[in-house]
Length: 257
Image (tube, rainbow, N blue to C red; front, side, top):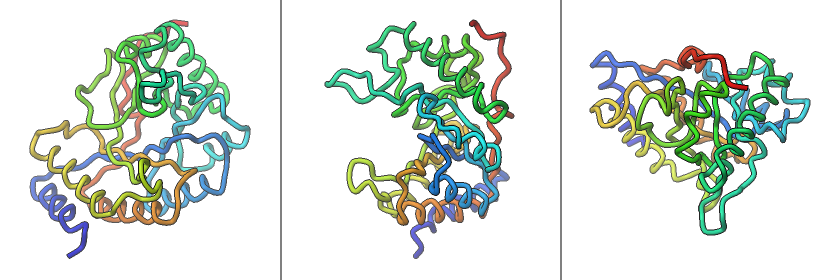
């Protein structure tokens, strides 16, 4: 029996019930045009998908802008430096609550301004905190300085992280970060996908939140790409609807300088 058979059966239930699964793809740590970014573009095009690149503002190289403009990409703001400011006894974070809120908001604004100047209309005002960690006090300020979305990891607890700030998370990561740093076990990845789908269909999770795949193109090996490919091959059998984030982001007031 195929390890994806459970996911296929679950998707068949979605079809029977007339449901459609919104999906999206976020890829982190983009800084430059590289062979790995070329492969990401190739993989996305093979499935007719777009990838939302979380770009590190202070790592941005001139080659990235044309690559984003020409590829199946939009850009998001991935912190500022992707630097760890957490104490030694805390998990890594650039925007955790151990730093003054004012400092964090200044840096978030710098990241947004930098990428707007360099990437223009390909940039979406969505904040992606490095390591998917952010102080709970930051969301209202992000909305005030011009962000319209916040993306971390795991199913969202609410549609908005703050008024005018959409919460749009990712849910699946194919990399075994704490072990081999290659692909996670395919059986476990398929089982996790199945649980996420079941939770949406049965009301245990927000079925309106697009199911997000999180990748890191710069560190992918053949096994990781193979797992990503298998995931999209199954999901694209339907019923899925890839989403464009700009169509979901709320309109907000004029940002505070």
